[in-house]
Image (cartoon, rainbow, N blue to C red; front, side, top):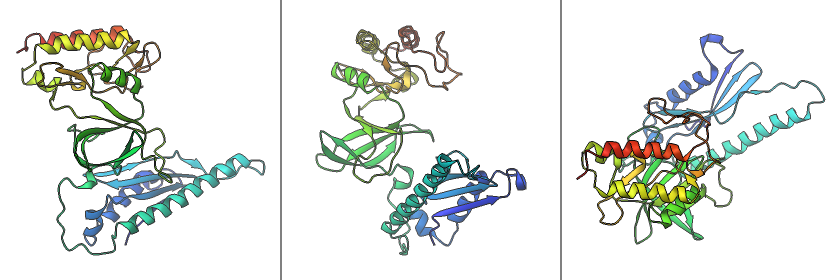
Length: 338
């Protein structure tokens, strides 16, 4: 049995000393981890909708199972009562809410049917890496041509990783990097790639642009060439920093600033060191990058790191901040150069 929706209802918030959305998440996990359905867990990520209902309030959540149970809330709690006969806007809001839910449940049911989860799986082995641990997106468009790819591994050892090493399906197969972001300095990336300071940007834009596709709202996909090498952080840890890294990083930031841009997040993990005689330092993360005087830091930035004065959430990103980070990196590298 495949459950498309898990419904958790309470008369009011706090009843039973729990929140209905949290309890719904636990109910979802319990239902999909039953021992009598190994086929479902093997073939899919067990996606389902979770409806949490408390009195006049209602919200929709989505759940999947990868290496753990992940439940996220795409909607706020909605007041589902009608105030008066002159509340057409609220009527339409509620109607739209349930119409989209109905359409989404239909799509989810069709997807499960395409997975043949009703057929028993006698071979419970599966090649590693299992698709459960990767996004469902497998295509992007380059110069009007659809490119298909398969995931190889995440590029960060962190459960929040959104950057993956993938390999194209069609010959000649090529290693590339795919990441998912809500903001990205694509113009900055292209400028630096043309100057030889960043990998080629192959695609930036909406996810899966085919007709009748699912909407991912503000989420965007970035596709770039894969650079063989290690992060500058790893090179520092190994105490093996090529002498040319200092020169190349200085040249890169000088070129970036000269083009009227700022980088924002210049640090060891965002620089790739490659064993090349020409360029050994490549900038790879342009999430915060943009026009000087136009871009700001995210709301939340890591307070445990040493930042320059003014580097705070929502503050403008300044060229002096880039230079502060650059000098910090070069000072660390100065005793480790080979």
